[in-house]
Amino acid sequence: MKVSYCIGLLLFINTPLCYSQLSTIDKKYTGASFVKEVNVDELINKCYSHEDFWEKLSNQQREIDRNRCPLNTTEFDFNRLYDLIDKRTVIYRDGDLELVMDRKKSKIPSNKPNYSLEDIVYEVNLSLVYKQQIRDTITLASYAYNSHQAFYLHSKYYYIDSNNSDVYTLSLNEYSRHIESVKYKYYQIDKENLQFKLKEFLFDDGYKYRIIYPDQFEVPDKSEPSNFETDKLRTCYQDEYNTTCNIESYNYYHDLLVKKLALLQAKENEPKDSIEVIDKQINKACLMIPPPVYHNEATTFTHKITRCLTEQIKQQIEKIDNKLNQVEN
Image (cartoon, rainbow, N blue to C red; front, side):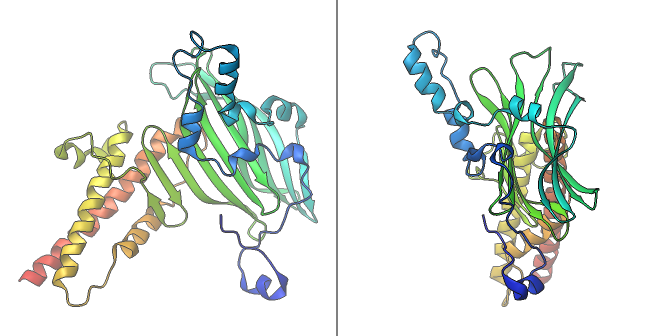
């Protein structure tokens, strides 16, 4: 990760953000170090247990298989952290600025449409406090369960890199033999503007996308063929309950934009806009939508962000079509 540091008075004057070290944070509060460098694809693969895990593997083989997954080997223990946190636990202080942990138990609606019961959520939050006023708060760690879905557990891990003032969080659904629906966030602690500045968001729930703020939106598996017919792709970005098609509809229109722009550039003597410039303009307009906090908000966020992006792309395609008509006439 690229991190800005404050070195001397000159940099302090010319750099709008200052991310100084938080080296005084006790290690017992810094979380699970594997979260910082986690590779989501590898994590999903390593934390998958085969169907014959109990039937055919020996105890030693099971232990080896379990240890492939960093969730089983990390020293981080949510229950221990939760018990350690009081109503207001200061983990860092620099003059009037404090980083404060607190814990909370709550209930949120289940994201499973067939269940009306609520998820029970235990969480640890981190607040940036200045002169006794909370200026920003993020959820660091949590676990949630639903008594009607005993096979399922939603958990959230974190790591505070005190050397670089970075915070990483990893949210996932844990099942008996695998994990899924992974959300990864990377923040920088901005002590000048008193906020946790979100720099990156990655989501994987059978479909993947990655956001690098303020203006990058990426679909890693974009090259794979679509599972939907073209007629479906033209409209399904509007379907709130089909997020996979939302993503593929975005891919369809983005590919169309690239082709249309290349056609226009071939006809113009001096091409003005590149796809990189247009993408940044489109992305910046849509990435103002706040990312999900809880796991039951991810579907709605995915729909909102892809619909916004797709509608912006369609507007750009319409502009290019108008220019093509002018060039040809």
